[in-house]
Image (cartoon, rainbow, N blue to C red; front, top):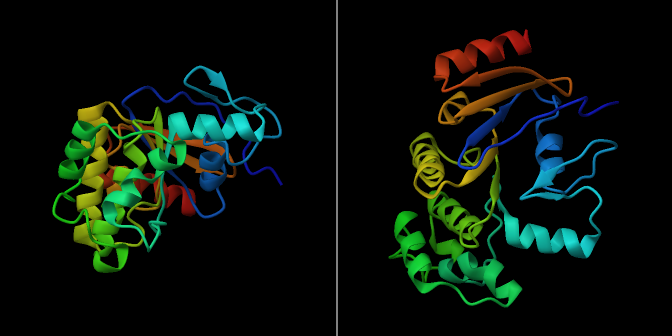
Length: 221
């Protein structure tokens, strides 16, 4: 079983790239490989000029800390910390002091300025995902990986999160790779890569929902 077969792609700075495909097509494996969570059997992955597949655990941890942000479907916030403490967690772990101006801008951008002292249990699902996005952005990563970021949210809240991701790519030149099964989510991307049986079989640029659904229907038929 080859989860991925000969996949090759470049993701430019400031691009928002969506990855779509049927269940079992290799979407999650691709993201985990790009993020250094899984090692490929062969081939290379380069982030910020560093080829990551041969790094040891310590060096990989440092590279993730400095260059990679993650946003997951289920938020993964620490319940005993406030929203602001969760946002600052990557810096706290690294022993770094936050840039106060950047923190204020980030909290305002994510709509959390008046929620910074609330714990996750006191926040809505959308607010928790905003905390997760702010946490991923606080280190100004080279690349942000988002795994089904709207999959656990209602339609309206999911739309707000997609707007936030799109704005991050546009306003901060934040590079983002997003795995999604939602046509609406994919349609905000600059590029959409469609996987089937471990291969990139189609690519669209600046596509709308109808175009995304048309391609997906052919892959699932």
